[in-house]
Image (cartoon, rainbow, N blue to C red; front, side, top):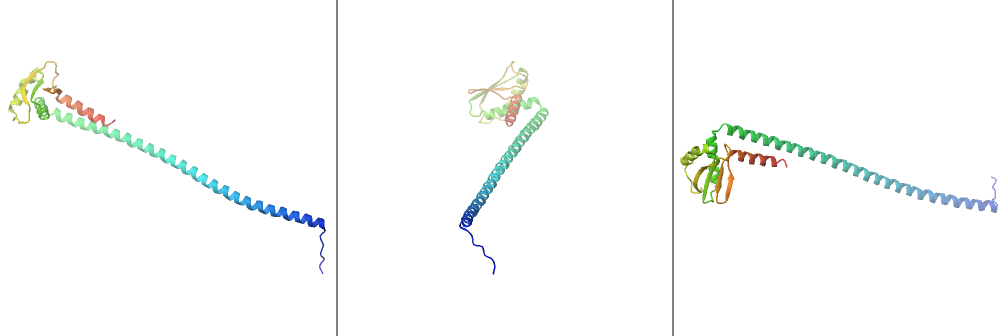
Amino acid sequence: MPATKVLSAEEMKVLRIADRFRDEARRLHDGMGRSVAEAQEQARKKGYQEGFEKGRLEALETLVEAIDRVRERLAASDEELAAIVLGAVERMLGEMDEHELALRCVRRALDDAAGDIWAVVRVTPDEVPYLEEGLRQLPMTGSWPEIKGVEADPLLKRGEIILETPKGRIHVGMRQQLSRLKAGLQSLDE
């Protein structure tokens, strides 16, 4: 028969205390396991959120840089287009007779002034005879204002033309029209 040892009351007391410590240790271990798992999950979520925010900020920075590059390229394209258009117009005009060009400018201005009662055309003194003759040869349209006359204005430079109507005066010469075209094309840059 195996030897069985009988525990004394003192030993039983120590055994109960040891059982309580063991149970308490298990409870603490189980609680720590849950706390560690929760802490790991929170750290994972926090890391994901921080990484997501960092990635989002980097993506936004990249997008802003790309938009800036596109804007710069579009501005450069507008400038190139403006230069091309202006150069083409200037080349075409350079091939035209300046008196024919002045007559075309006046005819266009008269079309635009169709609602006015009368008009006076002011040009440099040496352009008066060419413009008077050119206007006489044009078929008059009913929509044009009455042309009171073509007057010499010594203050004007060659190529400058002023159309005066009851509403006021407007520069209609090709130089002014080119300046307006250039300003319009340059405003595309802004």
